[in-house]
Image (cartoon, rainbow, N blue to C red; front, side, top):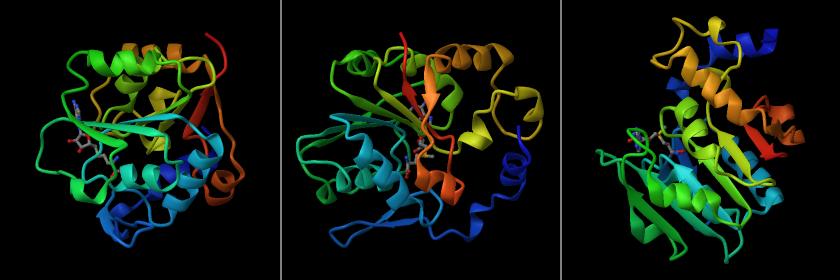
Length: 210
Ligand SMILES: C[S@@+](CC[C@H](N)C(=O)[O-])C[C@H]1O[C@@H](n2cnc3c(N)ncnc32)[C@H](O)[C@@H]1O
């Protein structure tokens, strides 16, 4: 872990963030990412140009709307969340966005596993509260050329697990981390200029081998 990552880990403070995405059609949707990151994430997704987006954890649908705003009309967006107090206003989304209510972590959710194997070029966006397990359970089924993205990567996913023990609320074991790394070894980080510039790098990986 380099010095900058450590600094990021200890100084990240979301309390002062506005936590709103201003959509291109003028709506304000709750979203839990850092202010200013939406256009960067959107641009990376636009450049990657997927045909299918799978979002794990949608809450109020803020990031789902980013995906809708930054992708072409034919792109399907499936978003998943367990039943909880948060829910998106469906009237703000077009027909190509589908919300699914389900538990993704207790056991693999088979309809999603099948979509991960789909031949279309896809983005798997892991933001479901446990990236370590999500990357393993679902990322292993992706095809060469597909992309995984994980919000909070420096905080929740790090190869040098010992440095994180006691610093996160996660209850993952070393075996969970080893499982995730066994999937990520087939992926390469996407060093997009915008992310390097803004300090959001190391959140996106492309599958390069099966
Ligand atoms: C960080 S929020 C997602 C934020 C959203 N992607 C955004 O950018 O606004 C994580 C979501 O994962 C959901 N979640 C937690 N555990 C889950 C599980 N086992 N299966 C499905 N969803 C889960 C929570 O209900 C919560 O809404």
